[in-house]
Length: 151
Image 1 (spheres, rainbow, N blue to C red):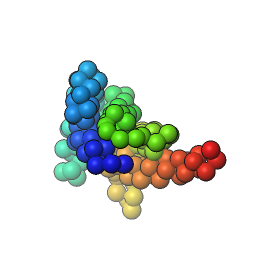
Image 2 (cartoon, rainbow, N blue to C red):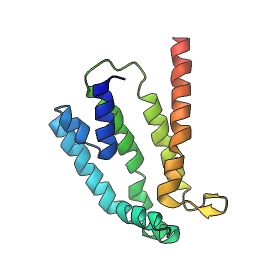
Image 3 (tube, rainbow, N blue to C red):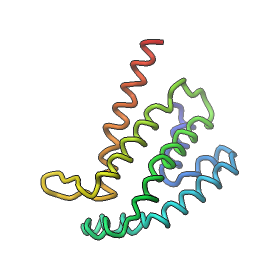
């Protein structure tokens, strides 16, 4: 990844759609930002973040609309990959795999977040999906490496 791609990735992490605006993909950027706002509001994600960081995981779980929040991982990681793809420089084949697998694992982490405990601590709808980023990217890069060796 070159510097332009890293910059766009970081902007996309900050808010999906920002990198698309920087890449001069204005319609796509506005769509991502609009979807981000809709999913965020409908899922009560900001409330979940607020209660989670205050240590009130049970309230975060109660306030979260999981049916809406389950759209968030795919939207978020698609926006990140799209930002890299449209940035200056070459995007290698299958570079989307780590993003796809991470979106999948984060969604699984979200689904099980009301029940997942580590050392007896309930993680909830914010911290559980964050932990699932690690195996998602690892497995995605592993699959990518296997595909590159095979082809």
